[in-house]
Image (cartoon, rainbow, N blue to C red):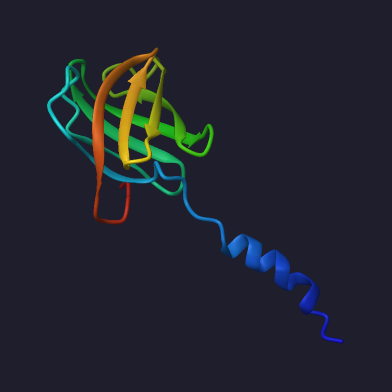
Length: 118
């Protein structure tokens, strides 16, 4: 009997996993109050976006809260001691919604490209 066979189901299960639907590069579907043109959520759990109001670059760590929602814990470049929490929810049509404390900050659509953060 081949000793590698018992591990085959585990490998097939792990291979069937797919990334969270929030992972990717996103661009705003329309102008928003915060002036966020887009955001990137990398596969490694990092996020990045800029806002005009407040004027900042937001550096984030994120993780899946459920199958469609991600929790982002972010620090603005304007005050590295401050931490803000956001949620990013991807609906059944593929539109992502960025919210903070229940307020929708913007809606986004996925764009091509590997989500990399330098």
